[in-house]
Each structure stands twice: as structure tokens, then as C-alpha cells.
Amino acid sequence: MNAKQVLRFMKDREAGIDRDNIKTVREHLEADEVSSGREVVVEGVDEDGQPLLYKKWVPTKKSTGSRKPAERTKGHSRGYVTDPASKRAIGFESTHEMRCAMMLLANKSVVHLEDQPPAVHYPDAEGVCRKHTFDYRATFADGRRVAIAVKPSHLVESSEIREVVARVKPYLDGFADQALILTERNLTIARGDNAEHIVHARRYRNEADCEELQAFLENVPGVFRIYEVVNRFPDFAAAMNAMWCLIYDGFLKLTYPDRTLRDAPYAYVVHLRN
Image (cartoon, rainbow, N blue to C red; front, side, top):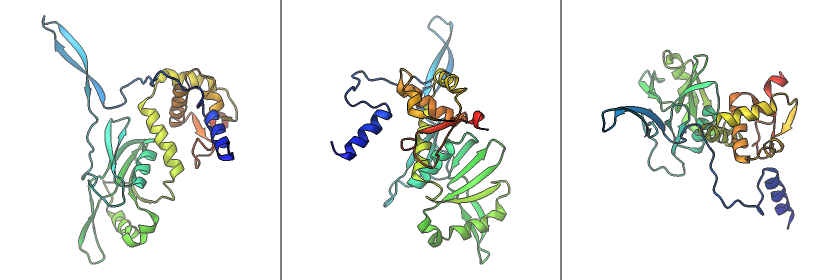
């Protein structure tokens, strides 16, 4: 084995992956709710006229965006992610927008997220009425609404997005309290990767697993190695999913949030640090 293979082997073993002991039985995370769509309780009557209650599966809600992502674009990715809380599709038209959506959905302070909200009208330099559609509008728990424009840094100047947002700001009343421009410098690959894991964990949340892990960590002081903790539990995947959920809840915080958990698997219990 060369040095690269040795390092990969060590990282895999640390993360609970044993290539010499691959399980032959497929296992699934046992979530409290269905991970795709949602279930609703329907009332009815059976063939004897007796009251009947049953669960019906309902697909993911459609995006509320004022327009859909383009079906075909050159050199861009586009698609939808699902808001685990509202069970609604959130559209994106680039990897930067996808990371932005993931990071907002991974933030417990964000209680509502809209993609492509209604356009805001504003006058340009000549006084001509124009309109601008922000990529996202996030509503926070304290009631603040933030409009977000996502642009790659190399297109900020040519797109004149700074000038557009500056002209829009005086006309945000009733639409948002603040307008921001985010680039890949804010929406980093590492932060987006961690956020994607949190959003996935939210979809497969198991409250019993979260409570068990939280009880285990309740009085653990200082920084701990995440993989050392989750490997103590019989089901690595369930414990790891609970770990991400506790990070979302704010019970835990990554020691190095600007790095992926895989590269820097360290965290601490927030209330013991404060």
C-alpha cells in the first residue's frame, strides 16, 4: 500500500468504515417521519359504515417560487432540495444557490425559506421602473426577513448586482428587512457539505436516538472527537445521524465549522463551553 492508500484506510477506519467487514444485510435509518413527502390522517368509513382513520402519503409540496429553474442551462446545475420542516421543494439554479439553500435549511434560526420570491420594483438611474427577483428570502425566528442574491464573485462586477441591490434597498418595505449578496466566499464547499449532512439528518431524524446521544454527551466537557463517540454505539449510522441533528439543535457545535466534519471531526457541548 502506498502512503495515500494508508491515509485513506486510516480515515475510513476512524469514520467507522471497515472494508474487510462489509455488512451483507441492507440497513436503513429508522426515521420518526417519512423522509419523502408527508403522511396525513384521513377520516372515512369502512364497508360496514364504521368510522375509519388511515394514513395517506402526500408528495412533497411544489415550490412557491415565482419562476421555475431553467430546464437547460450551459455550465450550471439546477434542481430542487426539500425543506424538511415544510416538506416543500426549494429550487436552485447553480451549485452556489444549492449551498445557500442547504446552509439556510441547516440553520435552526431560519423558520421559513422561499426560493424566487416575488419581484421587487425599483427605479434605475434614468428613473425607469425595473424589477429584481432575489434568489431566496429567509424568515428568522425573531421575525426578520432577509432577501438574498447569490452570485459567483467573478460575476459580481459584470452583473452590476451591487448597484441593483443598492437601488432596491429603499423599496424593501413590506418585503424584507435586509438584502445581502452572497458569493462562494461565503458559501464555501466545506460549509455547504456540512449543511447538506444536517439537512439529510433532519429528514431522517429519530428522536429516541437524539435523546440517547444527548444524554451520553450531557456532561462531557471540552472538545471531543466525534467518531470516537459514535463508534461507542451499536448502530454507527443512527448515532452519526443523531450527531448531526444535535448540531442543528444547537446542543453541539463543530469546533472547526469552516472545515468538513470528515476532515476535522471535533465538536463540543455548547452549554458547557458558555
